[in-house]
Length: 69
Image (tube, rainbow, N blue to C red):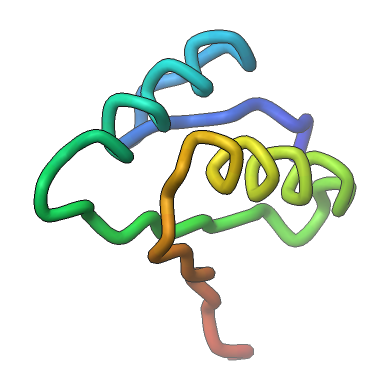
């Protein structure tokens, strides 16, 4: 909810995120990227992650949602 990014449950900085995304984009075959945003986070942070993934060259981007209880 505070806008912090995590990569496989490990906290990462905005700068480190770009490097991780670029490394994944270079893999063959390219993996899927799944984005899960906290419901309380500002949409701007999710949009920044999405833009960074697209700039890195990732093509398979999806969102993980959780059903309402």
